[in-house]
Amino acid sequence: MRTKTFLLLTFSFISSFLFGQKIKTNSKTFSSYYISYPSDPISYKYLEYCTLFDLENCRVKIYDTDDKNLSDISVSGNQYTRIRNSSKENYLPLGNLQRVSVDNAEKTGVLVLKVSIGAIAVKSQSIKNQSVFTASNTTPFINTLQATVPLTVELIDGVTKEVIKKEETSTIWKDNDLADLLSSRDKAKVFLATGYPNITDAKRAAKDFLAALAPEITIDLFDVLIRENRIAGYWKAYNRRYKLEAAPTSTLFLDLFKNDDDAKLAGLNASTKRLKEIADGIEKTAYRDGKIAQAARAEVVSLTNSFLQVYKDETNEDIKSAIETNLLAAYIITDEFEKADEMVTLLKSKKKINTNISAIYSQLQAQALAKKKYEADRKDLSATYSQALAFILN
Image (tube, rainbow, N blue to C red; front, side, top):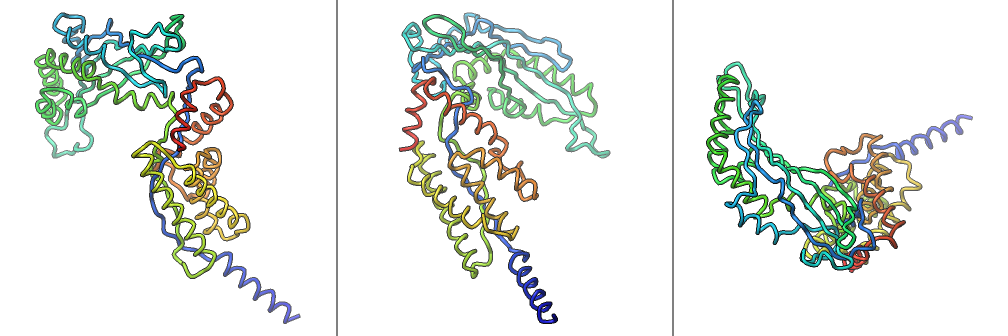
């Protein structure tokens, strides 16, 4: 009886040592690329498009801190003829469609992207600067600066003139980002950095600044937003809903085991290091050429399977969490968004992941839905998507 008890205690100790011991890891950060699918794919009817800017209601309205209008100037004035003419040469990308000139809008298969720029509102607000607000600070009030550019986006069939989609959106420039658009950027930055003893003085300074520079601000905004087409910077993010592309993952993580003497852990480390090598290679070619080698993706799938082979029989929670972290990265790289989201949920339940660190984690469900929709409706979508996918997976 004593012998049996001794054996049970011994087995219990060994099991505890093997399966309950604390396994230390090192976390490594990296980034790579994956295939991003359009959430709003374009119909099979369209292979080409043209951009049409509508400036009919475009104007710049400047307000003081009490919302009193200080200036209201339309782009239709004769002094802005050159700017209006420049807008006819500008364009914005639309999904994976091929661009043609606006003169070909009547051509079969052409989709018209009409972007109407509305009344641009420039405002200042006098606020208490919380970051430096102390009892000893005698000038705690500062002024902000913001320009809001309203856009009406319409997708129109070039032949039938049918409005397929219409949406209101806006792009905003604030404080120093807005100041950088102005020819008097140095004055604007001094204005933003100056503190005032009370809100009355701050409001008076804002009104004086905006009233004095209103004509200049108006010309500058017309020039950079319309002639230089700075709206394109905002549009890049907006256009992702229509585009199939190789997209950066943002920061991802891999876990390596500190104990490399154990054969199993050493094998997992070797697979993890190889995964990072492949991910780095994918990032290099995708960034440079917009392409992701199918052979590289296939090897990531193979490594994923090797991780899963160990994972299914693993009982040590530290080892399981490390494998889950590595699987999450592999799933993202190979566009297995549903599986990646499951890993995020699992790691989050263990408090093993901070989902605020990387933007991709909050996008996984939307990406999974977009991919599922794309695969289900592929025959009804623009052929430019399959062409783009074939190009990416060279």
